[in-house]
Length: 258
Image 1: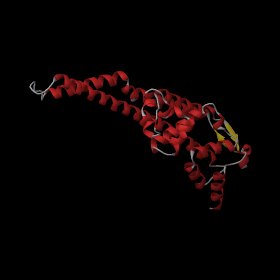
Image 2: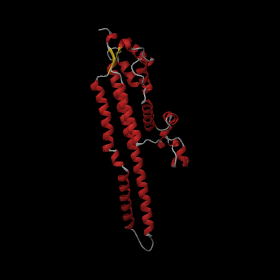
Image 3: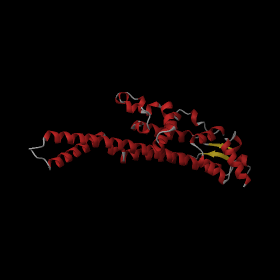
Image 4: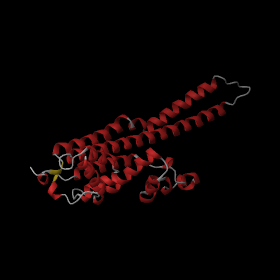
């Protein structure tokens, strides 16, 4: 069989369904087993219990000649507020960890699939290495210029692109991704929010720790990944491939020279 008669990219229905079900499973179980432990009701109850323990501990050294029980109660209250704040920050970190893991799982599945698909018509260790080393944008270019799938033209792309930047900011902190996120999707940076953030000078500074990602965003990101898998065409023949991006061509030539 000539190379041109081979499938360049193929998505069997069972594979597509597996990707979708795994994404849905991860999202639902992350919410059930992790995020549910950070509901406002649970965190408030935990903070109240913590205040009681602090108050009891303060009471152990209470001396009516020197101490004011009202001050102990106030101290316990402030300790509980700080406890709730720390829980809220932990909730944000857990959510971002789940978002990041979900994206990284998607990215690895995508690269593994690409390596599997090109191994017959564009073989070589160099090609495999190039696919695993390429940026996500370069992967999008491979799918586009080959004529298979223009990811950037899809309705879900803005959510998918925002997800990529959010994960980069979570992993690397301040840098280009944070600036890109603020420029392209400012709703994820605290500077675009009103109320407390607008009144707080420190929060108006562009800092990675001020990134705002909500439960609704988590769901939106999940839907974007599912939409990506759903949108992949069933197949395309090698004879229909328009061209390959330069980085892929370079890797292919290097493989031929070995």
